[in-house]
Amino acid sequence: MKSAVKPIALYLPQYHEIKENNEWWEKGFTEWTNVKKATSLFKDHYQPHIPIDRNYYNLDNNSVLIEQSNLAKQFGIYGFCFYHYWFNGKLLLEKPIHNLLGSKEPNFPFCLCWANENWTRTWDGQEKDVLMQQDYSLEDDKNHIGYLIPFFKDERYIKIDGKPVFIVYRSELHPDIKEATKLWRDEVQKAGFPDIFLIRVENFERNLDPTKHGFDAGMEFAPDETLRGEKAAKKNMVEYLFKKALHKSAIKKSLVYENGLYAYPNLVKNIVNRPKPDYKYFRCICPSWDNSARRKKNATIYIGTTPQLFGKWAKEMKEYTEKNLPDNEQLLFINAWNEWGEGCHLEPDEKWGTLYLEELKRAIEL
Image 1 (tube, rainbow, N blue to C red):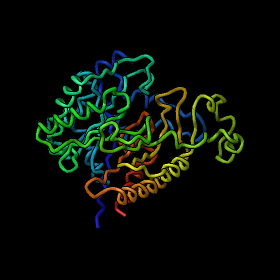
Image 2 (cartoon, rainbow, N blue to C red; image 1 turned 60 degrees about the vertical axis):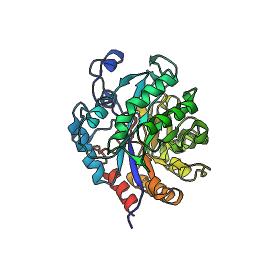
Image 3 (cartoon, one colour; image 1 turned 180 degrees about the vertical axis):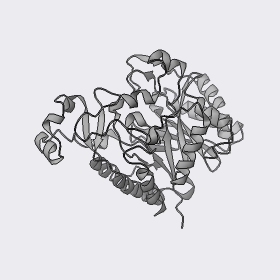
Image 4 (cartoon, helix red, strand yellow; image 1 turned 45 degrees about the vertical axis):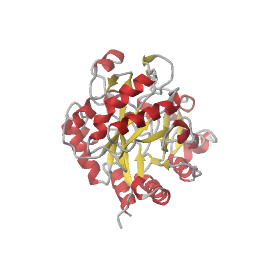
């Protein structure tokens, strides 16, 4: 019997030029700018990540999204979850989803995740050097849901029992989030939906019953830094260097102090063994993680990543999803389709080709 699990890949839209990035970073800046600048920091460090056929695509053109959707569908991915950037009515990186909404193609399910952090130079939503401030008000929440309703009405939009799925990246940042979710529910019901299905991402404030913020479910975010284990080079530097076939001369002395190296197998084991929360909880997997392309210091780099281990993780999370969620709610999230700047992508690259996609398909179809 075919599995009811629906893999949904998170999707970064920062692969087209926008006026703001030209002003903040440099003319022509896209995610590819950092990806191309990445360098290997130590022996066998996989950087830069190079897309297969050196396809540094431009999302100005909807044909790219059509090609990506066809590839994703081929390997069993159910849909994309696009990061969505709304700052009090100001949109950023909206062109791909506007192209999608204005076209019948690709015929591929999608939903939206509001990336509601401040836009900063530090890439982590912290308060330093804010480029675009996120301010909150119920008036803005009403305007926001009004903007979203045409997406919800699209027949391709992912729904659970007729309720459009909407994800908020950091619900804890909104000072009146419970009032906002009530307003959203009221507005979508006025628009003809039975309700909205709200999911809060647990990447910062974890183990919080989502109903306390007015949400229906929580969502794991991989890699979870609380479950990454100790630094791979921290306990015994000599053992690490020689057992992993690295050379002292190949690692810059500062690397251990300025960046964090962690073992992907430990991350997988720890997340698989995470205690089950007592609320509705969607699981998340990631093929790899290395954000040194974005960060020259304080990067997080997971070593020991392989398609086969990712496939085993996918199988474990598929089984969890089947066991703990009803058939109509069996969503499994993947971080990510195309986070190239964080070394976290299912899209084929020159090193692995389609192996990660193949392992995902095998795990879901088992």
